[in-house]
Length: 208
Image 1: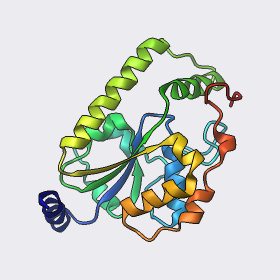
Image 2 (image 1 turned 90 degrees about the horizontal axis):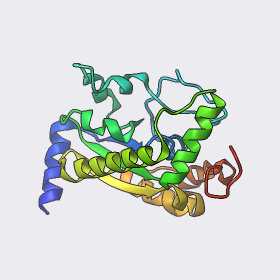
Image 3 (image 1 turned 180 degrees about the horizontal axis):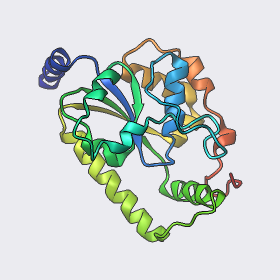
């Protein structure tokens, strides 16, 4: 009851929630953004980073997000109320408290994320300066900090979604997302975005 009253108060004070799609890089956040867009939700993206082999359906990013930690003026986020925006887990701490956020937090097997990141760097002719064991430690720390922040912050409501569950049960997971977002989104169109052929970095999966 208390949490419901708190949400009502914040809604009256700060307006409609910003739907934040978050998680580690390469965890499936772009897929969730595409699902929301296809379902009929307005999204925030500048189109600067275009689709490529690593994300053939687009990245759905906004360059302003990268400056959240450094920028003194983050008032532009108010324009994202009632819309969806992609913000990686590390930057959640830099979101101003003067908004409501409904966070769709995507979790994916960390080994798959490492594999996906490694293949992306290889295609670009780059090399990571950090070993896999250290990267796993950093990922786990980042996830722990994000989870703690989302639990404690009164500005956050959170729904965790598992990448593999979306691939295996697309319509069921799309329904969960629609219910959480609280909009009349088109579930079949959302589910239609999910393409298992893009699931290339699972253990034993083909290179992608």
